[in-house]
Image (tube, rainbow, N blue to C red; front, side):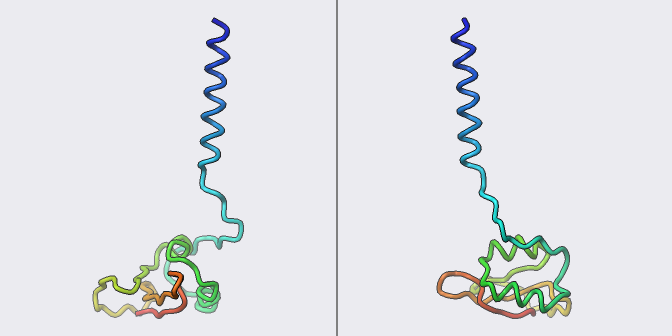
Length: 100
């Protein structure tokens, strides 16, 4: 009966270790999310200069709609920097773009 308890404990420890191995790694230098639309244009331009991935853009600016090449978007004009039309480099990273 005691062997059963030891096996169960070992199974739980193994499951916890495997779960820790599959956890998403922390990104040490990831910028903090910026709520709302882009109001600090120089900071935004510095961020774009780092050539972020679309996923990193969406994590950092969650309230800004990112439009990638080939995606369909409406033709409405937004004056509040809430929709960014990105240009991608050969690696699929954002290399520039503009607000529309």
